[in-house]
Amino acid sequence: MRCMVCFNEVPNGVDVCPCCGFTQYDVIGDTKEALAILGTMADKHRNVFLKKYDLGVNIFTWKDKDGTIVLNEKKRISFGTCDTMQKNTVWLESQFARIPDISEQSVELSVIKSGEPEKIIEVKIPALKEAELQKLGAEMNDDLTVSLVLKNDTSQTKSNPVSIL
Image 1: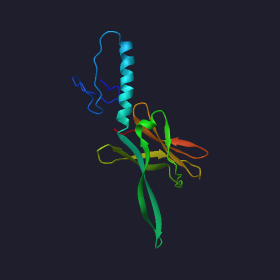
Image 2 (image 1 turned 30 degrees about the vertical axis):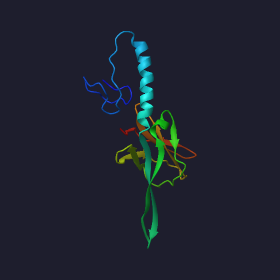
Image 3 (image 1 turned 180 degrees about the vertical axis):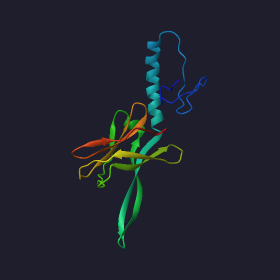
Image 4 (image 1 turned 90 degrees about the vertical axis):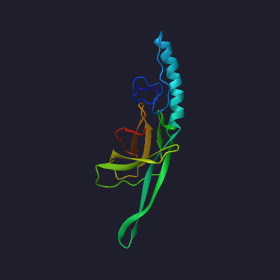
């Protein structure tokens, strides 16, 4: 069966989801009423669970050193905790230059779960065609996967969903 909170598969006979810790309930009787109550409980648990995950991206700046372009700095910029992203696109304030002549943009998605080391997920986003500054956003999908979004004043594009769990 699938967990009502994180949608991961829970093995038969297991009472608590190994991923998010939500108790798995067996229901008898009126399933409509039970599903409504369990749905509310699952939503509350999901919000608490998602607060443990901070989502960000690694940003790279470059400089010229004796005629060669070298890495100047790598820094992490946070979108915030994942509970703020449900049914919402969160945008970074910075604008980024478009790299010309590429078909897709590679982004290092940085996931930090409370008490665990950073997890890096490489995400490919179809590149925008216009030579304009672009913004980067993140949105949480209904199945708790994340899509990254690029937009400029003319158009917008989105990555395939990736699991952060």
